[in-house]
Image 1 (tube, rainbow, N blue to C red):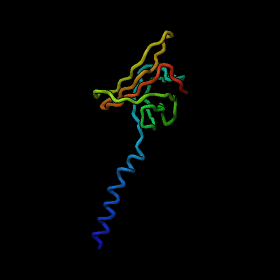
Image 2 (image 1 turned 135 degrees about the vertical axis):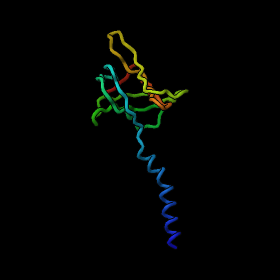
Image 3 (image 1 turned 60 degrees about the vertical axis):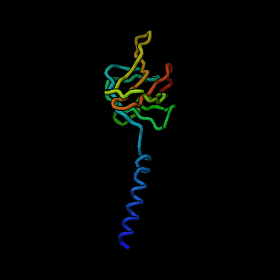
Image 4 (image 1 turned 45 degrees about the horizontal axis):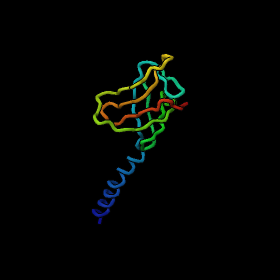
Length: 123
């Protein structure tokens, strides 16, 4: 009888573990910004940022956080690259006013990428 109780508990834990892990999982990556970048209405200063979104995609709302505080938000499209990149890659476009606007983030050792619209609405 004791064996069956332990087996039942182990089965329940085994079945619930993946569900609990998915429920707590955040889509979050860390990126380093080496030069000032425009994201929506906000400008990111050089430093390390946590990039986070809650949706499954393809349309997501991205938060840029530093030291636990949201410093910028922007809509983006989550896409899957054909190949895996080896390091984080921030793709930007320089505007006529010499501002560097973030266009895409390719995450290192992943196939995920975030593509930002040309006219980002943000914070």
